[in-house]
Image (cartoon, rainbow, N blue to C red):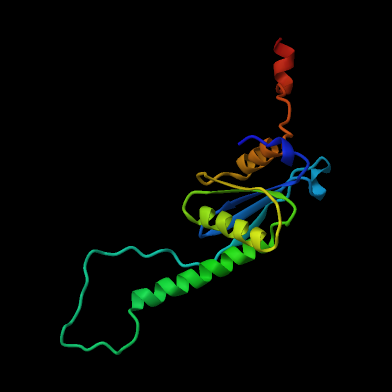
Length: 165
């Protein structure tokens, strides 16, 4: 991901997101004056997606109580919690920043789509990019943020390597 020329002046917010946790980092903030960017973590209350077991047990003698299917209720609850979680994370993203959303599953794409839709409703013009990425360590996230912000540090030799040359 290379930084586009017209967005070089914007601070960058990097969001790594899945259904369990969101991790936010921002360049150009108060920590940009020489320190490492602060990592902010948001835990989700979204329950894991249950997979079908392949066996359905139905007793044809028992009539339905007229209510919804329990699996359907669980899916609706999960959807509500996921929507609330994405709204909470979106509220933490500054409106003027360039946003890069990373994550391993479909949730990061949904989050990026919702950010773009909110920007269109509020007539904001900020770039929102998304890409698939595996779980990353804090160091990897900081390195990715530096790369996106265009502040990749120069490589340095270890102190004992200078003595050998």
